[in-house]
Length: 341
Image (cartoon, rainbow, N blue to C red; front, side):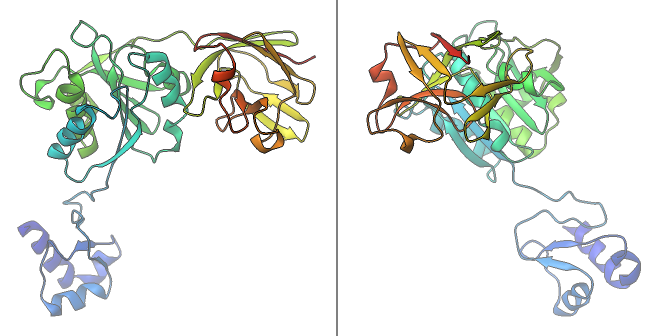
């Protein structure tokens, strides 16, 4: 506080020199100045009446609120998610916590990886993703943190970050081995509370990734979801079944380029872009063959089983105002085939 006041005096004494060099953001609720001083500062500064760290002459860094986004298989019935949030807020009371989902099937690492893939890019730069789907908790699997692209990720090293890292290939990882940034008395059954939540909170506060532990060269990677192209036949697998019973496949990304034509820009594997004739394409899944790919649910009659492109660009089998999974005998991992001619 004393440094901030001294800087303000110097600024008032030399207004022209310093105003040309910087914009001073002054938090009026943390630094008190006389009316005369305030009048002098407002001549060349912007005053913000908010709880921010004072940025004056490079002595302080302006504080920005970091989003910490949670994705787990903990569900809503138990205390686990709430406890992790409590740990985060105990370390950083200003953290902005967002729940992506806590309804991942228990121990389903692939489903969590796919959910993260379809959600991370919609978050602001600097977001810390806290992902806890951890069937190996308490074993020799490593707890890790990764900086990739514009984001940071905290998770067990079990492949749950794989699909994101296929897209954000320039990544730096550490094993969370520094006890300074963990709770004391780490349990063998709840690393979400004792290791992962503290790491996410400290990253959100600005602690350097390297401070959390030792560099990790090769995080565990899951195999890419199935996507194959052989002539006019495209094969994939069921990746997700959502709350509505819609069946999401690995065939994507699909994009409409004309009313009756799509292009497939494969999200997985190394394949060239493929044209897709929407009206004549056929989809086989669960012993049923569907013809045509629709633009919207409302194009079908109520209760009609259809194929559609879901919001993330993946091929989806759905029932208008109903459940496709209730209609078809399918589960995650089942084969799906798209025939385009």
